[in-house]
Amino acid sequence: MLMQFENPFVDKQRDICLWEDGNSQLVAIAGLMILELGEDIAGILWFRVAPQTQNNLETQILEWGEKRMGEVGRERNVKVKVLSGGHSDNVERIALLESCGFKIERYLLTMERSLTEPIPEAKFPEGFTLKNIDNEADAAAWAEMFNQTFIDHWNHQDITVEFVKNKLNNSKYQPELSLVAVAPDGTFAAFCDCQIHPENNELKGRKDGIIYMLGTRRGFRKQGLGRGILLSGLKLLKIKGMETAILYVDADNLSGATRLYESVCFKRVNTQIAYVKEVSSIIDN
Image 1: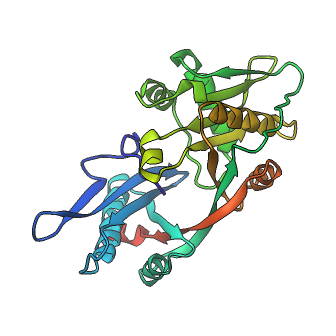
Image 2: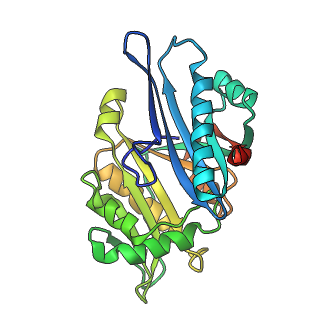
């Protein structure tokens, strides 16, 4: 899972840690994004270690993540857990997590679709319109839509209106790539947020666009909104000059998202395994 350091769920002073070698050279970085999930709190642990680094640094990082979550548990008097993961073919990472007591929680798929291939025309139910989200006046409606869309999904946490306003005001936000399908009565019914990261594309020598978030609000499903707004997002990425669309999806998604993506020619590229470790016992120490 990629860490987003600008995310409001990240306390930059306490939830990001760096490791240096004896020559003061950076050799590892780790971060926690701490989410409240019902009565529990989960820390999503992300880390990178420089190749050829020794001294069991990965184990130290996992121990740091558990210790930090233990602090959160004591401060808030709640149960806590650490989430981390890796590609299914990363044998060393999987062995590390399992040796440290982590258990498989979920399988997450990376899927791709060529944008050089024809994209079917998007169709919407009568009376529905598309709009871009580009001002704070839409923040409350967008937050409500998001929360109602994902309330029954794994690892969901409600977002606030302030969170959406921060997103809209972020200098990297691309409003032309953020679509909402609006029902005849004005209700925000479905959305597709796309992203383009020029720096990453330049480093990889690719032209990738990301379907970052896509969902249909409960009560509006089974009408073709998800397919329509997904195809609209793909068209936007193609217009922007992208050659490949990438997305990430929970393999056990209850709304049938994987089938939707496959129906418009997305193919599975790899699988990530999400691991979890309960660390609530640390609260009692």
